[in-house]
Length: 389
Image 1: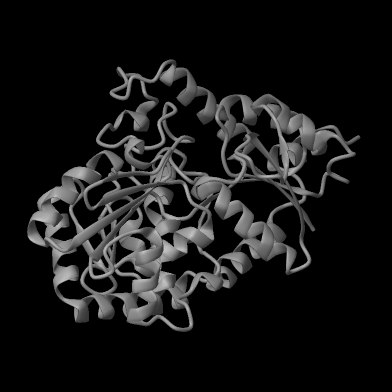
Image 2: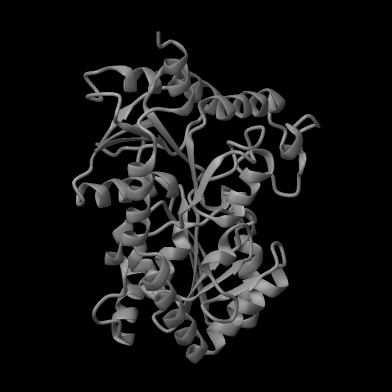
C-alpha cells in the first residue's frame, strides 16, 4: 500500500506535524508514503506544489506507481482549486478535516456565525472575500468526489453530518508519539536546571502558553495571553510566563516570548512548566494538549470545539467556558497554588493519553480505513459500469 499525503505547510503547525507522525507510523507498518505541500518552511522533505498542481502530480505515473495508491489530503490554501483537479483522477481520496475550512466560506472556524449551515450567503463577520463562492464550490466538490472523510473530533464530525448527511465521515482522535512522554528523571532539580536554561527564576511557578503564530494566533487565543497573564500574576506574584510560537525572543518582566520551537526545545519548556494554559476560542483536537498530557503537564483550557473530548474537567485538567477569562485565570491559579492537584491532574491526563491517544490507536484505525476503502471512487465505478457493453 502507498499513501500520498498533502499538507498546506511543509513541517510547522499541528496539521503538518500530524501528517509526518502518521507517515512515520505507517512506514513502520510497511506502508510506503510520499508528501507534497504548498508552503515551504525550511524543512528538507517533500515537494512544494501549488494547489492546482496537486492532482496533476498524483496523476503522473512517475510520482505514484498506479491508481491503487491512496491520496490523503490534510490541507490546502485553496481547497476549491485543489479538489477540482481530482475530478479527473481515480485514486482513492481521503480528507482529514483538521479545521472547518471544508464546511465554511473559507474561515478555519466560524466562531459564533451559523451561516456555514446555509452556504455562507450572509455578510462574512470575518470579512473573507468570495466566501459564498468558496462554500458553494467545496460543497459541490465534496458531493461529486465523495471522498472518505476523517475528523479528529466528534464535534467536527457532527458539523459535517449537519450539511453532508450522506458523507462517509469517521472520527479518529489525534495522537502523538509516546516518545514525548515524561523524562526518566523528572526531579525538582532537573526542573530548576531547565528554568535556568531558559533564563527564568528557578523558584518561579511557570505558566506555559503555546500557539503557532504566538500572540497573533487569534483562533488559539494568542491575543488573550497578556490579559490572562496579568490576572495570574496578580494572584501569584511568583508566577513566570513562557509564551511559545511567535517570531522572536522578547522579554517583558516575567513574561518571556519565544519563537516557534522544534519538538525537542518545546518539550524542555514543558519540563520547566507547572501548567499549560490554552485559551483557544475555536479548536478541533489540538496536538499541544495531547503533548502536554503525554508529558505529564496539567492543562487549563477553554472548553472549545473538541477539547472536552481530550480533557475531562476536574479529572484530567480544568476547563472553562470559552472566553471566560476570570474562570480560566482562576483555574490556572488553582493549579499553581495546589501542587498536589497539579500532580493528580497530570497523572490522570497521562493515563488518559495512554488509554486513548497513542499512535498505535490512531495508526491502526487509519490502516483499517485505507484497507476498507473501495479501489475506486463510487462515481468512477458508476461511470465505468455505464460504459460496459
